[in-house]
Length: 253
Image 1 (cartoon, rainbow, N blue to C red):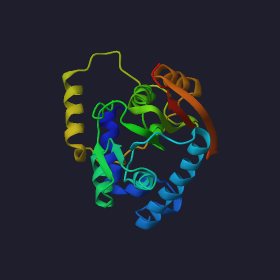
Image 2: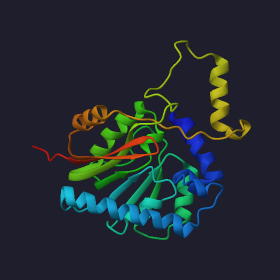
Image 3: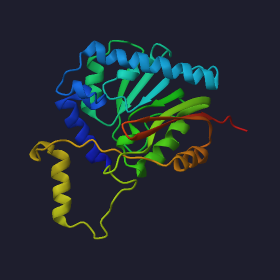
Image 4: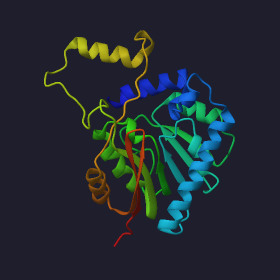
């Protein structure tokens, strides 16, 4: 799934059942999440992660935090309890609008970013770059570039905490993008244009694809970008092997 398709699907998910799309608890499907309950899960999750980060990496450098794949801002708001300012970024404009509507904290801002990079932000801008349950929905061909961008955005000594699956259940999309060997015809170009600008003309259930990236590939991407991996935490849940990578941007020699 290309990024423009990913954006279209997540905009549709945000319109249909946004909180369940973020946290797919079986008993919450059909807009059954209570708003306070939904956001309180973010507080508990971020508090646990910050304890692990500080135990492994010590004190973070001073500076703001970035939440990549912020969705409705569940984790972004919670990060503001630990940082002076936090930026949430997401590919879905609908999710970003929802996040803004449910946040009155002046320390938090939300940015819509449909690009395959994070060039909207200057290098060295953040003390922490944080991402959970996001890269698993993005085709791995893009993940390598995003990992490099995460490291670029860290201040020297800044910390990256990123989660992604190492394996997913059988039947999930493969660890690659598929491309046709034939050049696109005029009809294909027209269909692509219509699907992007008029998604409502193509009714159907939006897809939430799952991807896995091998540990060696992630470690290679982080090393290439100039990060030192501090720890890799493994958690298995519902046939998915999730790995959380904790890394530090190396100081300039």
